[in-house]
Amino acid sequence: MANVGAVKLSSIPTAPLTALGLVGGFVLANRTGNRPLGGVVMAAANAAALPSWTSRGPATAAGLSALYWGAMGASHPLAKKIGVWPSVGTVAAVSAGAAWIAADRRR
Image (cartoon, rainbow, N blue to C red):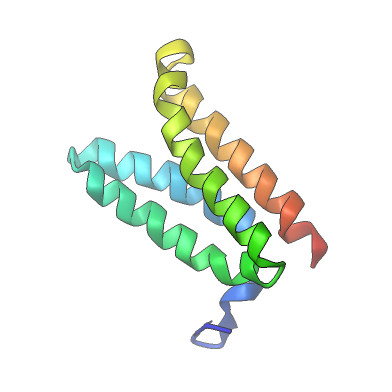
């Protein structure tokens, strides 16, 4: 497993990590006007969550990653219907909930 200092990445709770990746990526992209920079934040959060997700099986890792990136894509049309921040909050909550159900609660 990958380690950061003395912390195993597979031991980090991924629900808050996915929420922070989506919200943080949005905030950074919005504040800087640099959308790819927001994508870097999202990719870093996804990469940090992967060891934990992969430890629960490749299907879990693939499914949660697909949901995570799909949520970002879904936030755009959803924002036109309910507003930007409600959309970001909704997709972050759905992604975090899925990560908790599929990976975190099994610890």
